Length: 292
Image (cartoon, rainbow, N blue to C red; front, side):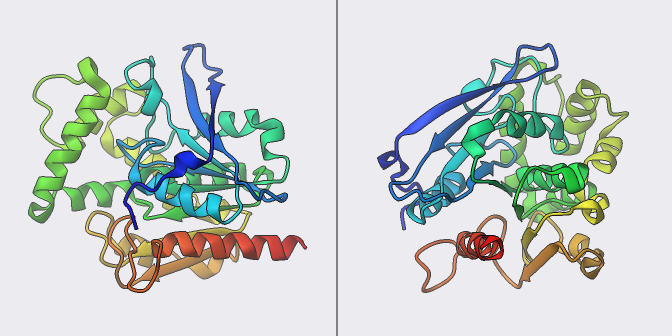
């Protein structure tokens, strides 16, 4: 399977979502509809840290969903993708107001229902959004793939010597996203969150940002069917954060912890798609059967 499948065979329509906070910022999404659309819900895909609607994993998911008959909106968070370097503010792991605004503006595009799928940071964002909306969430369901549900432990994992190269690469990508807004001397992600993210978004420091944005503390409030996929060998998001959750306390949560799969990987022998994409398709069919 190609890492970037040819999703351009389905024409994409750009949709701008104006934010209501006075900044003039907007989110940009790309809507694609399958050839055989038959009343299926719209699936919104939300990328991870330093990603965009054009990230390989987003395109791969879009390809399999469109081929399966589901319309797809590949959503860029604030300051990502087409709006990179053009916004006054920026996304972060807990900025659910932006996602709520985009969902509210979808209107007739989601006439047959809505399912939101998030990856990594985007997955944490989706879980927090679903919990905050609780029984009022205007969605049929949600999916989280490799969510850093405990942001502090994730950053501690990223700082381990074994992750040195990835940590350096990710930090450089984060700096590039923010451009001139990054002060000199930032040498770690936690330092970046302390000196850039926290002050820009009203947090006291990085630890306050992690505490208030980690979805683990919100999971009990989710009231729609939500599939949560994680791998025990994820090198950047520790499995212990998942093992400490009482999943039986909320029957709306479908928790799947695989022995292997890495971070937003889940490539399995014999499958023509990532395992998590196959799981999303099964989840969508189950939602359809439940509505029938």
